[in-house]
Amino acid sequence: MKLLFIRHGDPDYETDSLTEKGIREASLLAKRIADTHIDECFVSPLGRAKLTAGPCLEALNMEAVTYDWLREFDPRIDRPDSPDRPRITWDWLPQDWTTREHFFKYNEWWDDDILKAADVKKHALEVYEGLDRLLASHGYERDEHYYRAVRPNSDTLAFFCHFGVTTLMLGHLIGASPMVLWHGMISAPTSVTTVYTEERRPGIASFRITSFGDISHLYIAGEPPAFSGRFRECYSNEDERKD
Image (tube, rainbow, N blue to C red; front, side, top):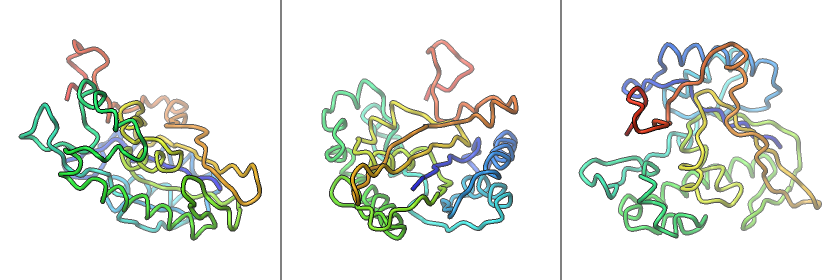
């Protein structure tokens, strides 16, 4: 089985839509996706994801199933340095989150007083369980930390969603803390992340990431990647996002 996780185009968060650049990116993505064999498509209920999926679905002559658990993962927390300004779960300063050892552990990362106050574990389990139900319906049933290949197949499933929820799902699939992935990786708008199953023994499968955040369709067209989700490379770079 192959999973494609596709981030939405350059976002206009205020209107939950795409910028003009995001619209161009979605069009370029559709040209790439048009030649890809995909068996089923799934999409977040949020506008920016649906607008990104639209041109691709048209090119594929397909429809997508909307799942609420694919919306961006954003339980609001009171971050240590700004307790009066609620932030999304994974927006932490490195000097704060890296001092908490449980954040590095895949099954303990949510055991933090700040995350407990926002009921983050409950929200994360909704995503994990939603993904596992879907995979089970396609023949892969979770068993502790791997999957039983009940009906092994080479189906390709595409998910049009968001960076935060994608890395949360990747952490679940490979047994990694999403806190590490959220802060150590970033995928540009309309990037494609590819995950395959590996079945080294009959009936026992694991998932392996073969590419993360691929934006070759943008480079080929001469379209620079959007900066969304990133922070300034050097603090003195005034034209880049600080916080």
